[in-house]
Image (cartoon, rainbow, N blue to C red; front, side, top):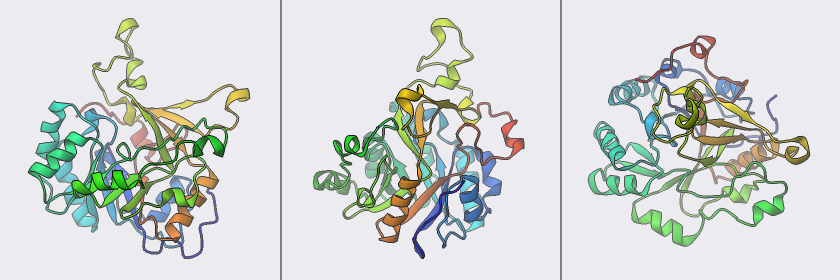
Length: 313
């Protein structure tokens, strides 16, 4: 059930974006934002009428970097739908820079690129200064463990994004926008960042990213499991697994699940409220909704998509 109570008139000027990894979702981008909020079981603000931006790509895995063909297709779909385009990128090894360089050449001047790797940030600054870098969630560190039992634990390590030193570092690369999650036990003030525009992902936040894909390892035997160099069939676009602990330990845990190499959690009602109140105060100016990622027993994709072949491109 959706959590109600978004402040009346909240985020009247806040942009609603949809983030997609899989190109199968692109033909359905004409969906109204309100329907997407409903599918995500997230209470929409009164002003959520339509989407205004498409985020294409993946922040967590190099193997899900879109192909040039998919990016060209997304550019055409976004243009036809009147949507601005943002390209999301993960942390990458050196060979990944070559993949991203090819994609950056396809983007129009002023297009946004979400960056989660300082090497990618340097590449943009040196070779593509006309593109607009955005500090991604993996650059904007904060403690987001869904097992935190009380607010006191969360306050021991407050988010560092608002520190003058970090903002000065981002400013050296021309960054004017950052992306964050809503942390456990969030207060509206936790979503306030000095001189940067702020995008917030909802209703899921990421807790931790690794190098091993748990879902992708299930088809291997013995020592071949849980290796960072294993072959990839993009199982994460179809499957995820719920994470639980014994009731005597995990009764306060946030709902959590693993998709690919990363662990995610779902916002509870208080976290949603903190997000809406921060937006009502003008501290958040973009909400990013997942268009094709899902937790167990939850889906935005159609039944046809659930049974489709999501093998490698």
